[in-house]
Length: 303
Image 1: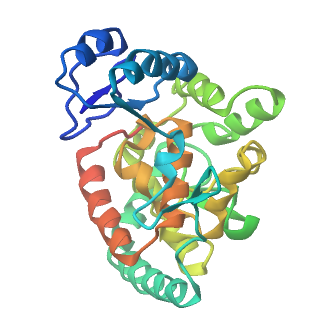
Image 2: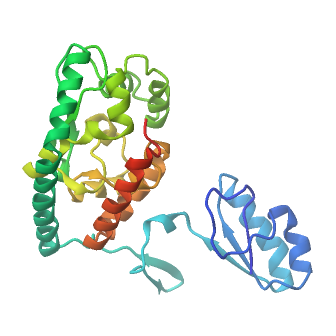
Image 3: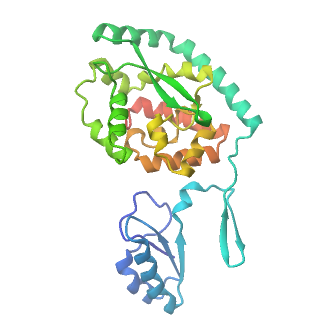
């Protein structure tokens, strides 16, 4: 099998052999060693890639298959069937029914309660450090969108000087530029870190600033694992399929935190959130929590 991209693939493809690019395709199919062409679209023109592959491969009896861009949203339970000449991919409802949601909620209450008790001395020390090293409140609360679109106030230890947090500035900047992409606004504000306090740098790098969100978990506004809660202005920019993320409680941690944290781009985050909601399981939550501990200890992707 030949597998190639017109630009280098961003991820490791495992056992799939990468033997060339689109420019190498004529020589590869003429060699007689390959019977199948698999196209995984990159940032290049998908029409150009497909047309070239069909033109070069079909006359030589080489099969051409295309990996759809929706592959990130599908899981092992996906069913493919035909309706006449039309190929259909069945996308089912999220897998967390009422019973499984009750199990997830019970786990959240018990686990978050235990962690709150164990982490109480650490949280007290962080609170004192924040208070004595810079003026302002120990905690800040900010509106986020939770399950079914309900708005709640998420809590964190304050890490910046001044009246506004970086997140508040992000919200104001994005609302002032409704046409700007969220990712562009985020990147623009990442460069201004002059107001992060010395303690703020430490608690961000170690994720200690997130510990007060355990209270949000106990209150039922959040879960230990799930899609991260978005700000209202971010939710307004979501595409229709991305609203599926609100079918479950937002999480203190989630897939994108353990797979890159701040290094993961916006579109990939949305795809991860969608996949999590659709294929949720308690086993997956336990794996994410275990991976979160490793990521936090290593400081991977922390900002």
